[in-house]
Amino acid sequence: MNDAYQGRNRSARDIASPHPDAPGAAITEGLGAIRCDNSVFKELAAHSALQVDGIAGIGGRSSIGDIILFREKGSGIEVLTAQENANLGPNEVVITINVNIFFGHNIYEVCTELQRRIKDEVEATTSYRCKSVNVNVQGLRPREGREARAAESRLLPHSASDDK
Image 1 (tube, rainbow, N blue to C red):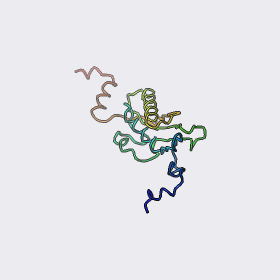
Image 2: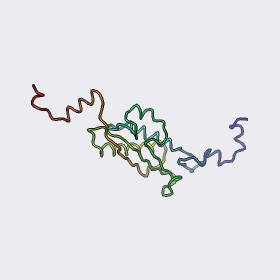
Image 3: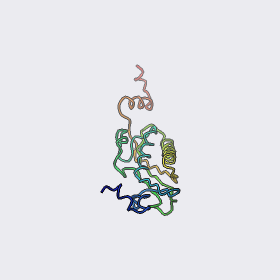
Image 4: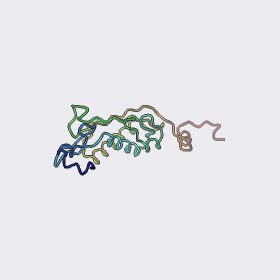
């Protein structure tokens, strides 16, 4: 018989929390537990990174295409919940993200914008509280193509021979 039909033989705890030992966070108010796997928080953080101008990549990823195709769990994003850290409440998470930033952007401004977006996205989507969002800048990356040449021409001083 299929698992859905055999569900009547399972305990209420099994039904409310199908994987009680799985990493993640659970809200246990109301009718039962609602569990979010750590991969949910990682996907939300990666999605938030796409929204921030100046982010060149997550972890070892160095292009927006690599961020969009983000599927490798644990690559550049770490999530801690009450299950992994006793100092966290049952509805709290700590997210650490490793990023690369494009040259020409203010690191502090890019990182604080990323922190705000991750916090807002996680809290609005999951109802969990982001206790902290830690951003580690692993490196700077040049932009490529026409955009890079335009940015470079704005940053480099012009010589007198360039005007002739």
